[in-house]
Length: 358
Image (cartoon, rainbow, N blue to C red; front, side, top):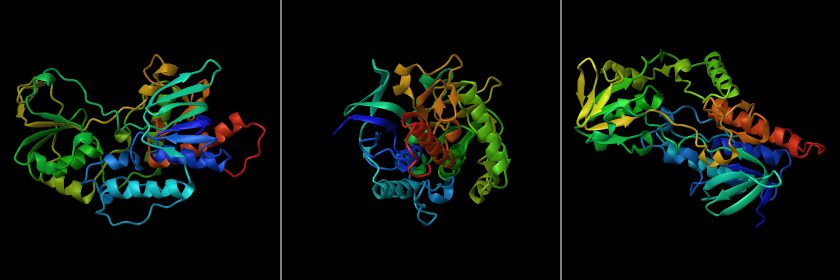
């Protein structure tokens, strides 16, 4: 196997598969022109790790990958089953050269200004790198005074397997996003729950439309263009009031408290004297981009983020980040994959005829 290729794609989730599909469409040869390196043992990206109770009805829409529609499935099918099956079919149908399980440990520049991609299964060299590693492997948990003294269980949604394990307990759920709301609804059926958020939630009675979506994307685009870390879009889009959310609100489950000031051995406390006992704290506090393997390239700027121009790093058109910033959604990932393929064809094959439109 030749480990010297034109493009290495890191990650085989929605963004990585989209990029791979479009690279093939514009003329990069699978296996010799580009490869996809995926850390998981099977197809499915982050979807395969979602908790069992997250069904198709309870998630944001699974957007079609380019060229193949997501097959119809009952609403009660877990996304951890439906999406990996779809991704596996997609890889087979389009003959995408996915190597797994291969964990990328570092990406470095070579003496001749190419890229050395170091992995758990040997090294690759490439002219360009497309990073599509998402966020699932970097759950974020904020720090609060006394956190290390807590005698109960602390976990993140990546660790959550079901509400039954909290039966009869007191659970504090921290976070203002859709995952926090869903897990609160589930756990409250079997446990005493308390919801805390930094800001009051903004509720939306109907799914957010194109205007709200564009506003959210614009905010994230501004952030990455200026070299700031991309933030959450929930503050722009709000939380959609679905029937099961409405039921949870009527039960008082979604009556939130401002975030506590400190953690004690047996609960959480506020400076005004309020105290809530807790057997467990669920940190539904989001994720950060999984970019540690790119550290040798020194891409981060003084503002903590990576300054971007479209899908590529500012000043480095051979390093693209997809599923990052404004493309961190299923629709955004598809569009970013098309842009990556178009840009790399122009960069690496400036005189070649475009075989098929990207």
